[in-house]
Length: 190
Image (cartoon, rainbow, N blue to C red; front, side, top):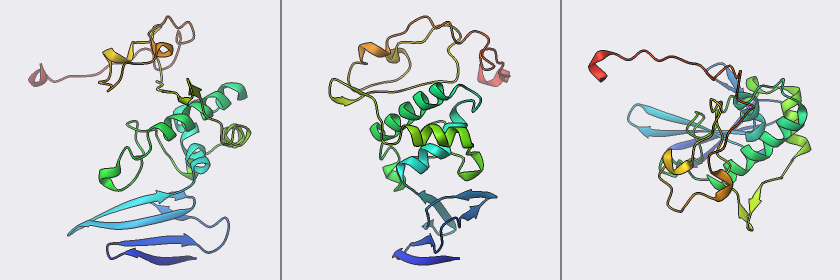
């Protein structure tokens, strides 16, 4: 059971009446609040409005292997939380903070959650990384093929990349399931 609350003339906020009740969108369950907003004559946007810890619980198993050791999962929870905090309002033009894709962090809602990754989120609740008194840049990737890249070769940053992000050899990426990949390209793109 949900109460629909009119947030503005183009939006409806759906709030669960009882604990452990969730709204299902495209077959996936989502925690906390759902906002449905009309963005055009025949277009709606659905926003999952939720707390930071529930957000991290919904992305952690999408971004890492839930079978990793708990300490690695805890480290990624802190990295992902810090990344979220430093990138708040990344999609402010769409009137939300984040998308649910790789562009921000992959978010899968309740269906993606695992008991062990939720534990990692709980054990690190509220923890973030800082450097020189500010939130640290915590960019990350699925695989580096044995060497990370200097951020200036990947992104256009408004400020110089911090020293701790410079490219280094990485012995842990060897054998990673993402290390080798192929992409078919049509001749018309060449």
